[in-house]
Length: 412
Ligand SMILES: [Zn+2]
Image (cartoon, rainbow, N blue to C red; front, side, top):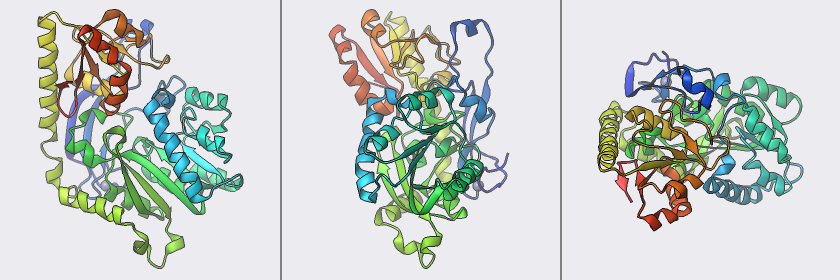
């Protein structure tokens, strides 16, 4: 296997989570009598560009099929995040009815609905049919396709280059990183701005977020590596914001390099330098940073299993909340099955009635918590634990308590 950016052969394994089915391959009741394909789930570090990556075992066309069940609009925290971004960004860039805002992986239109609502033309690019359809029902023009050089060239040929290109949690999910970033340069209007959000590899390692590793999440990104990838395709990352989303994300700001050929470094912001310094000081450009992560993941597994076994022996019940991809990595790596976690609740009707891949834990509507009154609720999407604890505050009425698994299992 070679690095998906610089083609250096990869041999340094950073994390080995065994074998697991794809995180979003939920099972229907009829699937339960059949087998499931498990793929190795291993992270490699590139010794040259330091891109951390998983091998591509499952084709993206299979992952983002019409049965794709992740709809962004079911998280109120995420909707508020999108709304605040749009409200701050459109006026700052002076965008109006003659502008074009393009979002790649626009999902169900969770963000572009606010762009359109502000009277600015919006175009979504979304490969998954189920979510693209939901976006169209909101009246948002959505091209159902994968983004890259091919589509970007086509759009540019139609005069549809964007003043603003947004990509939230897509950069890490792209199998052909070079083709995707090259496409960004082509789809961007001269003088336009690109903003992309992705979980920061620094936070992943610092907070032992090994559960954010799954097959559909191909790359794990530092600012230094992303700048290098963008620069290779004529784009300059000149600014960055640190965000609390997904356990700690970066939002990069990028432009065409050619417009500032004289001295691209001169336009770098203070906060960009600060994050680059943070990464260098932490040793992210050296092997040391990546060692010891496996042991931390295994310790969390032992602690979580110890906790679940203790409750089982004491006759107490444990349910989980949030059928997110990261939950599947955690449950499958730990070998948790319905005997230890009886069911998982999720607000999305697209997941209810299905079973988690691998662990085969049934997904029920949130009302099941009040009906069954579990002693503990394990919060799988710990990145939105405050939102979930607020929604489920009623479990305190019967003495129920919450368990947060990462950075180490804790009852709260
Ligand atoms: Zn590389």
